[in-house]
Image (cartoon, rainbow, N blue to C red):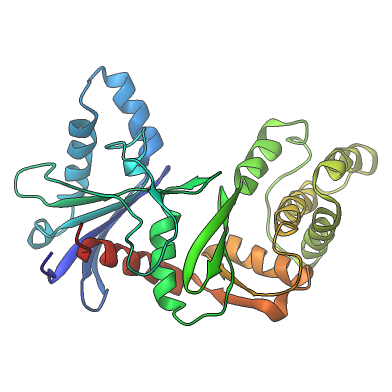
Length: 316
């Protein structure tokens, strides 16, 4: 593909749709429009609609969102990554395969024209022998460009389903998924612990609760310690927000216990917001801060655009 001056970055996740007009060369964002209609909610609307053309339904909504951008930006090529290529999305694409390297050759791409004159490139997810991901792989592709020449190690991407990706000779050769974020949501909102935990502001006392949770989860897993949170609230009236951070620490500590245990290799942590800070603190608590390299919010956001640009310009 001849390099366009701009492209439209579409990151369509389970719960959000983020659209940005990006200068191809500089990756400067010149316009954007974000929507709360992620793939999951739009799929529910599609099922309720009684329509049978999934592609047309999703394309209609996407076009509405693109039309909210400045008119001069409407005709740039679209690169759509995330859950849009899942079976509940716009078009179900097969998974690409490992390894992931800077070329993006393992990705499957589908070129479409969802409405007259609009070029759209849809990105597949990536699978391993026992895992799959959609969305993180595009950011990973961009991170590999930022990590060029980095030592072998583990790339850790926190989230609803956290990913631990093995970096070997500049390539992602394997990965594992951890349902840490989803487990936290289920346990804190739908289990017997729901009345014992409540979100709240971070402070020194809660940092200590989080630290204790991380150490317990890292050393012995989370399951043996869960009911103690309920017992503490009933028997000793422990603070629900303290319990909230203790539970978070337990689950994150358990996840981190599955990092390579021989102390070799760098740990690369990439993410955004409070979750990035929690994982960074948890890794320090676990005693691996000397091995740690962190890619913060700004670099992580840039990585997505780097990955999307690479896939936009890649030939089939």
